[in-house]
Image 1 (cartoon, helix red, strand yellow):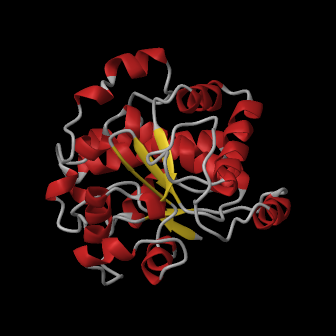
Image 2 (cartoon, rainbow, N blue to C red):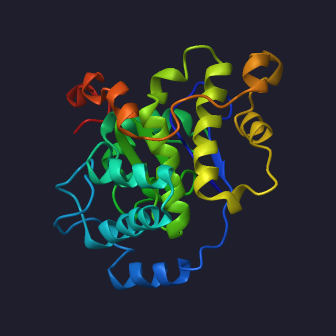
Image 3 (cartoon, rainbow, N blue to C red):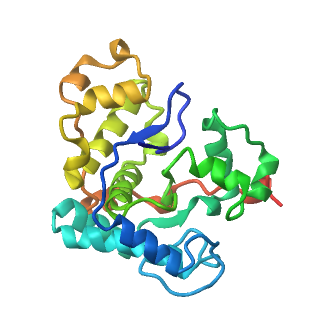
Length: 266
């Protein structure tokens, strides 16, 4: 199983473990990535059916990698998958890979990856194939902040699609802020909801798994400190990234990072 960092927390265990199942197309996907130069960096430019965080730094391999996951969402036909795909196509969220973390997003990630020793100076070394890039990708599959979603390379198509479902759910619920409202209850609510959405899309990955126990254990949450009423009924809106969800989620109102003030800024 791969760990996935949903977003920063000040909790002892803030890494999300995604249960992995074999994707029937994963071998073909890997072969396609190799054929498109998937092991390389994002250095050629071109259009895409989604918006990247850094559109000036792109590659056919990465665009195809994400495109396959979006198409898997579109083929699924469920309301959740359909609206997730539409949200991505409409540019409601921006998607990129972990080597394209903004400086401040890198600072947020490194603060939570306590198992990896990274400094602000390492941001300059966050390049495709670098030791810094490998260290982060070995630990996490996905990360979000505001409308920015970053994903690791190499996930099977359906698991990447599930990662997008999970992270888009965090975006519509502004989880980077909501986590802090009433810890540990608020953290539990945000993760349970995102996991529930992910399990709706990919139920086989969570078969026979108690999501309440899963979230509590993965995040090392104090069950006794979580509101009992929340534990009894943990699912809360918003679950589907539909028009109503986006009307309530004003991404343009999010504070803008001053990249020039980032410790690792060039």
